[in-house]
Length: 319
Image (cartoon, rainbow, N blue to C red):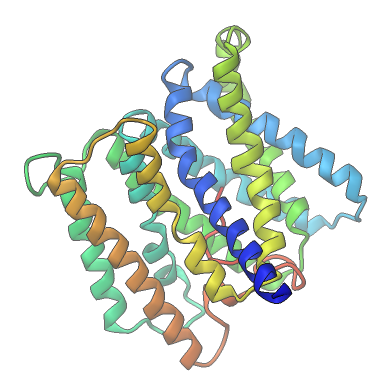
C-alpha cells in the first residue's frame, strides 16, 4: 500500500510538471497580449534568476568553472529558444504552440552524432510529424505551409533541439550541478535580454496584478518549481515512465488552450494534432528501443544529463 502510494505520488508530480509546462503557452500568450514580448522575457528571466539564486544560497555548494562556462553557452542557446517561442506564441494559439514545440522530441536524436544511426522507423515517425505540421498550419484550408507564429514555433523547436543536443554533449563530458547550470543560464538570459527590454520598463512597472501573477507563474512555477519537482520525481521512478508522463505536455497545452483560453481547432488542425502526438510518441518509442538494443550510451530519457545522482528524464530539458 505504501509503495503504491509513493508510485502514484511520483506520477502525480510528473503529470503536474507536464501540466504546468503545457499551460505556460496560454499564460505567456496572455502576458504578451498586454506587455511587449521583450518585457515578458526579461521579467521571466530576472525573476527566475533571483529564485535560482535564493536556492543556490540555501544549498551552499561549491561551483566549478565548467558550470559557469557551460551555463553561459547554454544560456545563449536557451535565450534563442525563448525569444522564438515567446514571439511565436504571441502570434498563434497556445494549442498550436504547445503542439509544434513538441517536434523537439523527433528533431533532437538525429543531431547526436555520438550514437549509431537511427532506424528507418524513426524517420517514418518524423515524416508523419511533418504531415501533421502541414495540417496544423493550414487552418481550414486542408494542407499548407505554416505561417506567422506557427513558423516561429517551428524555428523554436529546431533551435531547442540543438540546445538539447548541446546540453547532452556538455553534461556527458562533465559532472555539473543542475541548479548551478540553470542559475547561470537564467543570469545569462537576463543579461542578454536587458538591453532590448529597458525601453519597456515603464510598461512593466505599470502592469496590473493579473499580469504580474502571470509573470510570476512563468518564472516560478514553469521555471524553478517545475525544475525542482522534476528533479525530485525522476529519482523515484524509471526514466521511461518519467519520459512518458512528461511527454503529455502538448496534450495539456491543447487542453488549457481549448478549455481555459477558449481557443478552437479546425477539423484539419485537430487531425494534425492527433497525427503529431502519434508521431512524436512513436518516434520517442523507436529511439528508446533502438538505443536500448545497441551499444554505447543509454537513450536520452535514461541518461543522467547533469549530475549522476540527479538525472533529468525525458531527454528534452525544457528552457
